[in-house]
Amino acid sequence: MSVSPFTLIFEKAGILGAASVMNAVILTAILSAGNSGLYASSRMLYSMAVSGKAPKIFAKVNSRGVPMPALLATTAIGGFAFLTSLIGDGTAYVWLITVSGLAGFIVWAGIAWSHYRFRRAFKLQGHDVSELPFRSKLYPLGPIVALVMVLVVIAGQNLEVWQGRADWLTVFSTYVGLLAFLALWVGHKLITKSPGVKLTDADLSRTID
Image (tube, rainbow, N blue to C red; front, top):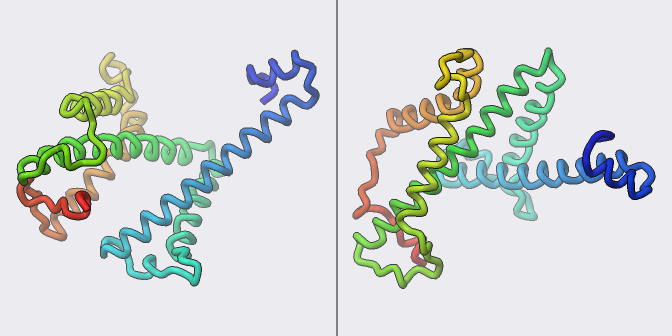
């Protein structure tokens, strides 16, 4: 971090070891992000196990309520992802970063779509919006705009495609996360034979309570 603008500012201010200070700040931020990531991912895996969407072993907790099997599994996967940066020329690591980055956009698209459908289902089932403790003033435009923007960002991950000079290996590596998501979603539908949920049949009781 010797050429960071923050480092240069600290050096101009006469602070010795500015690069080391910035490295310490960045390391602290990385550890914080890793800690929150492990917490969230282990609890998601635990929740999936409790609801029957993951192996039951991940639903076990220790005496302090920590889902250790889920935590160990997510830690192992995170460790493997880190090791890929040390293997070869780092191509595998770049692919993993690309997949995880696109997954974030997919999640936000799901949030926007869920919000849009939730409010519609809420009204169709005879409820009034005033019953909700928190209400979006921009509904329905807000979630629609958010969904469109996310889809535009996903489509624009490889501008070269639209400019007629695409590197198809790069395109595949960019959208492999989307392909994996679609494969898992279609596979889940085929295996469980679960139909789509109509707005009038959506279970909103836990949300309302």
